[in-house]
Length: 281
Ligand SMILES: CC(C)(COP(=O)(O)OP(=O)(O)OC[C@H]1O[C@@H](n2cnc3c(N)ncnc32)[C@H](O)[C@@H]1OP(=O)(O)O)[C@@H](O)C(=O)NCCC(=O)NCCS
Image (cartoon, rainbow, N blue to C red; front, top):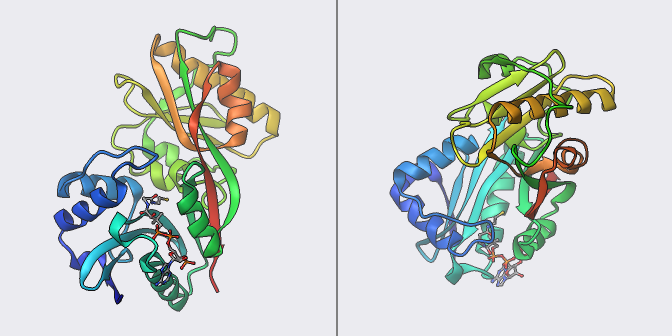
């Protein structure tokens, strides 16, 4: 078996989409087949850079990929897949080792990823390649009709996404997942941000079902006060859009469940993730 690793920018997007569809068919996290346009949209939302992303060929055939999002000198593996026929052959190793070698050559500091806890094969692969869990991420679903929001309710002022990005957040990537960081918010197609002095909540289109919760930003202030204010703003936003489902995907560190979602009657989702980090030499 011979493996060659090639840059993603050398391959047409339609061809990349076909490999992704094969690799992700039946994926535990769900998958809808992509074409060139929808793959481009996916890559934009993930902040993935075709310049750093790599595909692997096995005996000349494209069999897998690793999409890379480079933020400063921190990399994120924003999507990885190997088609079923090439699994367990060493293709995944060849691809990852090439990506690590190039990153170390550039002097990059670390690589982050999120892996679904209920995807043991991928989790084991990353552990073998020296990724370590730095957090557990859970998803939440709630309904603005199901909760009495009046008590907690705080009225946040609506601000633009660009203004939300300027808020000096107490925690930022890579301490929190890229997906809820300012880097991901900058890519959100439709975003509505609601802020008070100390916190800001960003949701997607409130006319969509469910309403997506993209991020909850806090400036540095005593723990309990920050959560209380954030709960108030989320309650206020939910009250403004009554009888809607609200959905926070499994990209929120567990403390968001305890201090934000659970108190507002959200229920935990079956899929959870590990946030993992590998330090580079
Ligand atoms: C997750 C995924 C990328 C892992 O790829 P994989 O090929 O199945 O990975 P495996 O760990 O099963 O196979 C690699 C193993 O094959 C074995 N192997 C068999 N023959 C080999 C050979 N000739 N050379 C090297 N390794 C070989 C090794 O044990 C190797 O482990 P290593 O990492 O220590 O080298 C792949 O299963 C996949 O695409 N799944 C669906 C999509 C997905 O879940 N993506 C991840 C989202 S985070």
